[in-house]
Image 1 (cartoon, rainbow, N blue to C red):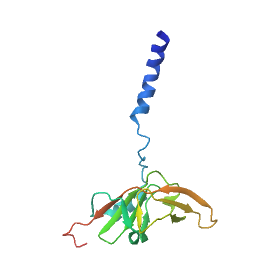
Image 2 (cartoon, helix red, strand yellow):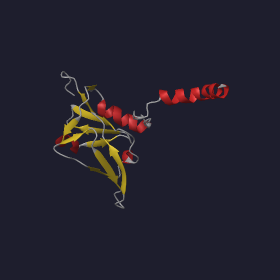
Image 3 (cartoon, rainbow, N blue to C red):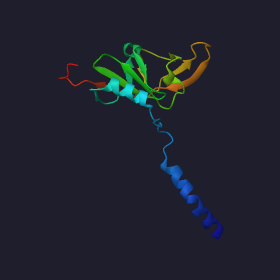
Image 4 (spheres, rainbow, N blue to C red):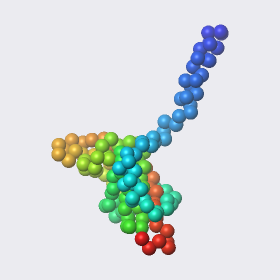
Length: 144
């Protein structure tokens, strides 16, 4: 019994650290100064709204890659949708690979898959998963 109690005390900090972390939550990777500047420029003067699950396909034609975790979909100069991927998508931020989106229906939705393809070799890269779309809108009185 004494061995069990000693072992329990020895494992308690390890078990507590496991319980405290949420492995299902996406990890926010730190942005480089250039990425942060690009994100700030695209969202400047806009206010975040409530996340939406899907966007009409027509909104996904102007896609801006910020990092391996963040995509922006520009609907117009007034509205930009930010998508924080479910997990990191290695190589997405380079903006040199081709994004191939697996789409079903007339919307691009949270949970949809896409993968990257190397532009020169044609080799398929990682499969990535979209998150929710957060709209950033210019306030109604803003003419900019």
